[in-house]
Image (cartoon, rainbow, N blue to C red; front, side, top):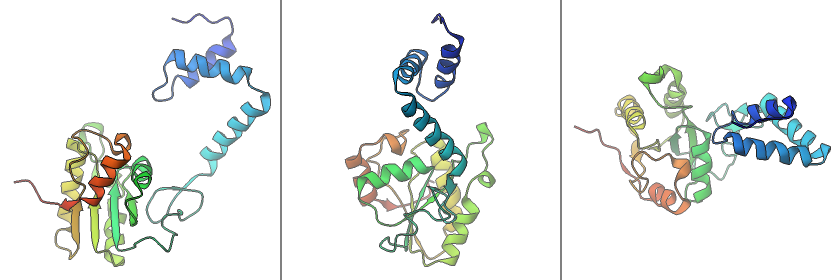
Length: 204
C-alpha cells in the first residue's frame, strides 16, 4: 500500500489507476510526471481529454468514432464500397487499417453477443448492418470478429440473417490465434488473415 503525504496526489493517482492496464505504481509515476511538467502541458492534456469526451461522434454509416457525422473512411471515394468488414469495435478498425491490406468499408457492431454479460443482438448495431446491405450494392461481407465463443456466436447469428441474400460471406483466416483480439495481432499476421479470408460456413 502506497502512503501519500498529499491527498491531492492520492486522488489523482486513484483516478489514473482506474484506467485499464494502469496499476497503482504506474498511476503514481504518471501523476508525478504531470506534476513536474509545465502547467500548460497538463492543461493541454486536460483540454484534449475533455474535448474528446464532449465532441467525439459516431459515424452515421459505420458507427466508428469520428469528428463529424461521417468518418474519413466512409467519406473516402477511393474505398471499395462493395466490401464490408464487420468488426467488434473501433480498435479493430485501427488494427486492420494498420495492415494496409484492406480497402473496403467497415461496420462496427459495438460488441459481441454475450448472454452472460446481458449483451443480446438488440444491443449491437446488427439492424443497421442488415439495412446497409439491403440498401447498398454490397457484394461481400467479411466477418472479422474475435476468435472466441462470443465472436463465433455473433458470426453465426449474422450469417443466419444474411444467408438468403446473394452476397459472399467470408471470415478472416486462422492466422489470428483462437481467443485473440484483433488489436493484439501483429500487422503481418492480421494482414494475411484479411487477404486469405475464406468462405464462412456454419458448423454442423
